[in-house]
Length: 201
Image 1 (cartoon, rainbow, N blue to C red):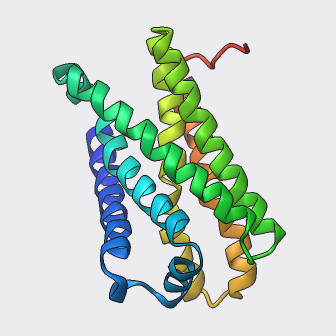
Image 2: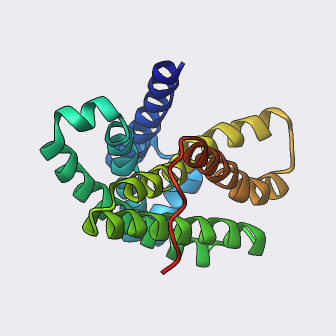
């Protein structure tokens, strides 16, 4: 079951990462709303899509214990790339959220997602610098759960359209639903696997 779950998670992450890269590389592929964002804030949108796509593509392989133990040097270098990708994608995402026209509920939802994404990744980096491997792994699980908000977002959006929900209301709710449940599941996983929560500093 754990192997099947990892394959499902990784396949979805790679699909959404490929979609993000396609939006960057192929202007004709962009939906109208994405095209407007590219026109208004091209560098921010580029950093958000590329950073998020790279983090999604790398993160799943970083969490695979077998790959991590067999290719430790590669794991370290990919970890550095992951951190840089989250820094770019999260910072750009925070600025985009603050300037969003979707209303305060969506602004707060996506803004706090960006802050939590950056903070959890920073904690993972801090713990590996201290050689606290258990806490590094715990915070990386939280970080990647937030990275996967891009996947759950793209599940909820078409689902809300199929359900014929008002887009404004649905989008505000999805700004929170795309990441809060992910983080709760990650926290349950961390605690159930005896990966103790990080001590306060």
